[in-house]
Image (cartoon, rainbow, N blue to C red; front, side, top):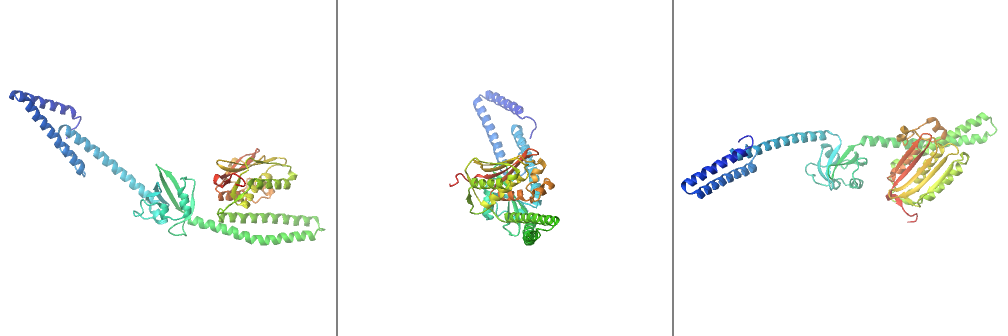
Length: 437
């Protein structure tokens, strides 16, 4: 084995050998024969080194290269160095991969690497525990063939989106609830992440049950108190002014509590029920015309300019009562927070993206820091002003849950002192282009 560039020495050696053979052949009078024998010897030597190289590359398991000199010694040395560098890189990659696999196995969430069409490549220990898959028997299998759940099959069949998630029972134990996400990475690959949210799901169910139960328990005594207050007010029509004022206050507050109970019950029902499996076609333009007429009749004293702009006569496949509740909440919110003689505009239109309903007002507006929290239960931007309007603090939460039933979303734009715009955006699959179509 030699170091440096072997070509100059090899060329010099070949030239000297050719010269010696030519002189010897000329002296013996057999120049052609001597050159032929020299060329044959050179070819045999080259062939011998080619055979040694092939044998070393084919059978090598860490052995050093064959010992040789000249040009072939340089070739063997260069290949040996390349091989050592390659082995060092492979060892570093194995170390990194081993550390990566250990770190993934330490993650409490189930992680499964998928390649199209949804074939499992590898997964961690938590995925085996939560999804019931086995290594290496299930490698290369489609996950939706092993996890047979219609909702899961629909979810994993959609385009990957890290913002989407679905909560489903584990195939190992239905008491274990999994929050599943699919994140795209690499080329035509996905990373499925399954998190055990059983405890959170149980707490959420307990909260919903508590709200539903306490609302039912409050309804009866409130009805009794409100009825007694009405009866006393009628019987004491001639009583002192202070007594009538107190009875009127009792009636006002019981009505407010009754609305709160009704909203809590509606919100609880929305949380525990799914989108209707056979939604009916709802004539949204007619629904909005009716709501607009009701709002004008109930709000005449505030002299609001309420306008309805129906751009497209398209309808939705939905539950009419739910749509009425969502749209009326947005409309009466605008009425409650718009000063006297202000304007409120309702718009309805459809396009390639779906259907859209917007309520724009010239009301007091909302500061930007409050907008992300408006759909939280009982969240108040201004508690004093909200109390005067008689709202329950649940209207926008109800709207959000109704829209979620249909894959729709709520958009909010507002600036203090300049008014607000609330828009419901429905996906295209819920739209009927013709009212009677």
